[in-house]
Length: 82
Image (cartoon, rainbow, N blue to C red; front, side, top):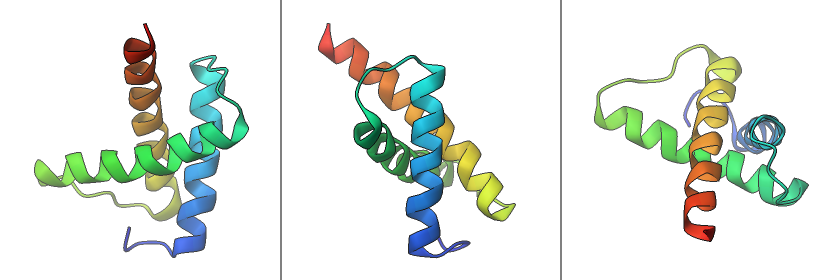
């Protein structure tokens, strides 16, 4: 996450996780949703980098990838929980 600082990364990841939790109707709690957003953003950026796709657009790009990564993580967590 070279485009934004660490504090901004945490805030953006938190917002992305919160939005993904609302979108997926996850009942994990606000802190877990924030953590999923941060981890989801890291995972999504890592996966995209493997395909030579790099996020541009500053905080908005990280918000979108964080949201998508968190949605995928919530989906996987639901599969494992069953």
